Amino acid sequence: MNTAVAAHAVPTDTGAIAVRGVSKWFKSTDGSSLQVLADINLTIPARSIVAILGASGCGKSTLLNIISGLVTPEQGEVLINGTPSRQFNDWRSVSYMFQEDRLLPWRTALHNVEFALEAGSMLHSERQSRAREALRLVGLEAFADAFPYQLSGGMRSRVALARSLVLEPCILLMDEPFSRLDAMTRAQMHEELLRIQQLKHMTIVFVTHDVEEAVVLADTVVVMAPRPGRIRDQVPIALARPRDATEAATAQLAHQLKSLI
Picture 1 (cartoon, rainbow, N blue to C red):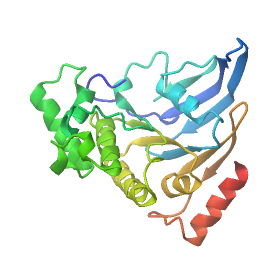
Picture 2 (cartoon, one colour):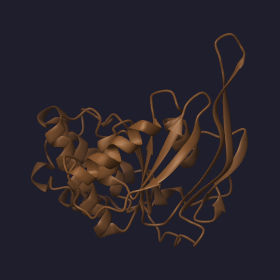
Picture 3 (cartoon, one colour):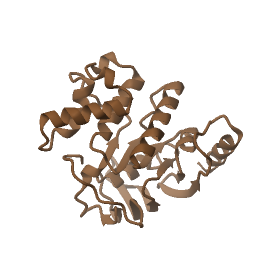
Picture 4 (cartoon, rainbow, N blue to C red):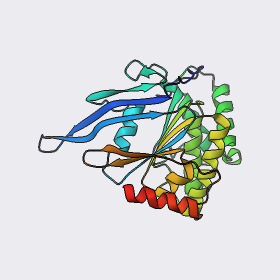
């Protein structure tokens, strides 16, 4: 993924992402097969924010990895902007933000963000300009020359987010990206993500086990059940933004989601 910069395809009316009958098995240590996903069907509208919620071991990250093209399902298919993922050739329009920030310790914040552009043929001056703009977008332009050890956990997450945004993706996939942050910093990152999504009109799919995070951020919460992973329910979140996790309506939805897990 993310090897160059070009104009990206406009999502079709079928959704930015469509998961059709996806099932996945992994080999166990004893040689037997373990089914981790069973008949997943899911349509994610363009420019929406969708949370994949569930307990540990329900296949959330596996599903995200299948959507990203990093893992191939044994059954079913994924369509990206209407094209089967096996034929999709615009992976530069899809970015993936991992749970760990994965910053290179010997590179500054600017050079960590710039790293996402280095596989292409972009001129060095343009790479730096794009990287600086991405840091500005997440409020870290003043820390471009700082090394990761000089940054707080929240700032490191912002650098990782900037690196995911520097290619101006249509789709941003996130695997519990804020789970290691304290509550205050996590709330700040939620505000940043919503602000950037409104600005850039991206489709965002994120995995979480945090019910309140799902309610605060998502337009729709996909609740998964484990062993094998399957979709138990899809819950639309119609509350106006910004959302406060302590408000009655938000807490009521969170309680509803917890009862489904």
